[in-house]
Length: 281
Image (cartoon, rainbow, N blue to C red; front, side, top):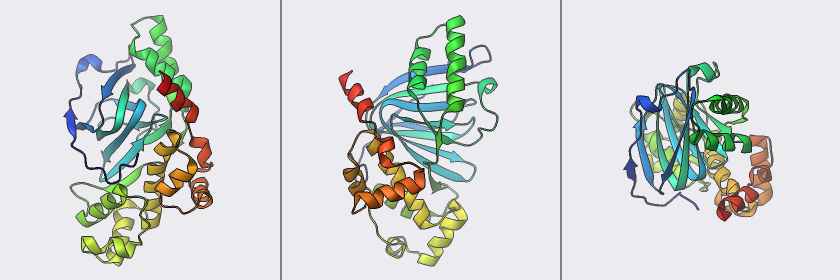
């Protein structure tokens, strides 16, 4: 499913930031499950603890605001977002989802994990998170928490975030352009054509990309395409269809771009067997 031109009516749902779910040195890893309908929206909020969030099934968009920059992640069921303490974030559900959030006390958090990142969710980690949902204090719970934290620390990271201008302090013209591209990442329009509707010159927008996002337009758009393509691959869509949905005329051109950016071929991220198992549940 392409979300590029879908008009949605978001439904805001609450979040629980209460002390009774807070991780502690005694119970440093706490997990919670939630079923959320498509277009559900968890309002911007933050936690005093770190959070590992992913979907057991479905697809979500997580947007985080850290310092003077905002980053959007499109997260399929095989990936998770790591969110450090006190980082504002909000979630939009793009496909009906089984949301899993894991909160971690600083005593089990890697010391250098101060930035948001995307992690690959291994089969073991997925099962550990499920086990945490029903665990009760005791030796078994302690073992599951310790192994969960270790598995998260060992998880493979991927540079899948799409940086966005700050919603308040960033340039409004640049944000309008970025949002337009995210709505339709397959559009191969040149920068000179994107800038006309926002009332800025190509030179000005090129400078804004460099100054506010630390990149150029082509590199930024490639990140947007990858963020769009990975969930499609994770759901088992054929590479030919993913290439077309990403604006590429041939599988080979798309695969070459993908492998150069990700270090692996697109088929590595295809998850047909996993999605078949989910549909059979």
